[in-house]
Length: 294
Image (tube, rainbow, N blue to C red; front, side, top):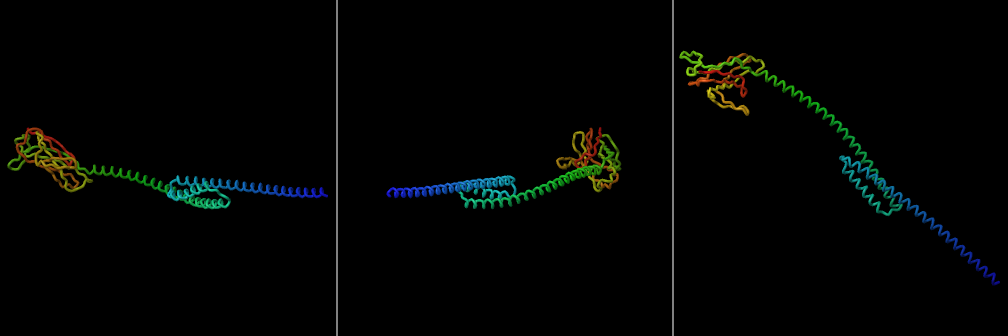
């Protein structure tokens, strides 16, 4: 009877131990499953975090490339790039779970959307700038061609002006000079004797020129004796950086036809030797000759 009771107790103990073992095995299985689930979730979160960081890095690279183009939107692009960099640094340091990672993903999506808008706007701006540059280049080409054409015209006009100016210059012909004795009757008699001379006569012809400007024409007559003295009025006049000492001025009414001019330079005690006579149109020498008195 006692042995039978002992057997019953032993069976009961074995049963309890078996139940405890089963419970322990079940708990260990659940713990193992939970651990694997947590590990799986952590691995997934880590992967998604790395993916998010890669997306942010790509955003930064895209912004860097756009900023390097130095458009008028550079400041706005830099501001958005800085937001991306800030979020990257924050995400790197954060201990994320599924909930916080979802928040980060939402922020990344917003940044991507903003970037797409800005990049598209930047591309449109670049296209406008390219079109404007092409238009400006075309305008510059037209302006250069116009300037070249104007230079040609200017050169032609300058040459034409020079031709007209040259053609309009008056020619001095038949320049003659000599000494004369004036008799009491007023008659002038040519002489080669210095002591007999009362006047020096200068005569010349202004040739006909239909393209020249008509009106009063003044010539500066310079008479120089054998001792290099300027005779007559001995007045000094300047033409730009040139100066001229002249004996007298001969003013003629010119009407585009041939004009004969004769002027007298009175004097006394003329020196023997060679005399030089120069005719100037302002500062330009237009005629010269010489004669000798004995």
